[in-house]
Length: 364
Image 1: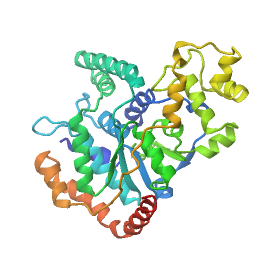
Image 2: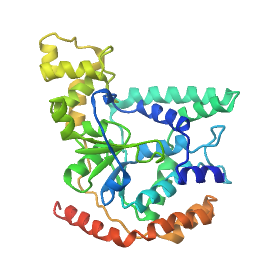
Image 3: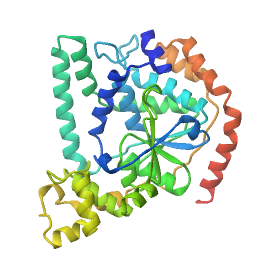
Image 4: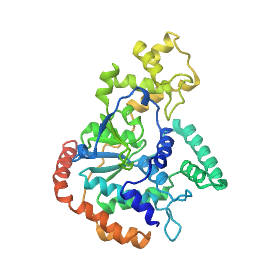
């Protein structure tokens, strides 16, 4: 594993041009309603003591996208296995834990059938990116197309879960959308904030979400979205925010061509729902919103697991080192350094764990 990659990620010295493409690529995921949202700037210090429900797939995508060598090749061990995701987890997760954040990772389950077209389109784009990566003549082009070809294989998810277990970080397997599960956990009081790059968390009803949590610290601000603030400022309800997103387009429907977030906001503030817009012939029942009732139901009544359990524990340091250093060729010195960061926070974290467990118990 190249020393420069670990050092850059661990100390957050990745240059902004290197990061920006990754963030732009990820904007393709979820709904594009950012133009009408105002997010607060926040900090890791402000999040200390909070339980953060992390959109696991979203964060893994970021790690796999950004942690690469100059020619776009992901980090690999001596057996050729990709380790970019493990590098991201061990170094970034321990940095966040050292700052006092309590993490719980939420993994996607089976996607809705309505998402099939989006998944197919992404697969086509990634296949084209892989082709162009292979034929790229200069490192900058190779890196760009390599990032755009990022995908999460099943083995990557299983390895991530194993490392989280060894680090004592709980995870929840959602039956369907991870962001829906994370939003439910925050509404229920078992977590405080959803961490994701996508605004879908708000559509699923997350009271608060934070963006850029897994990005390097320098030059990238943490952004906090508070659903009640958004509703108050825009003069809409959560249900109306969902209507706006459907008009613009979501992972479950393409939306209406030519309608962006600002126009959708104006239409919904005047007419309150897509039903009214159609009844008054303000808009036609275009193919992009033909399934709007089903999409609305996905966001307002998502499938979630109500019987999860959150338990944090002390890291199993020998298992972490065996897994990372012996199996995947990580530097033992650097892994020890990462583990040392969270040893000093474990005692102060115990009260948070007890409180979160109490809140869970009252629902059982």
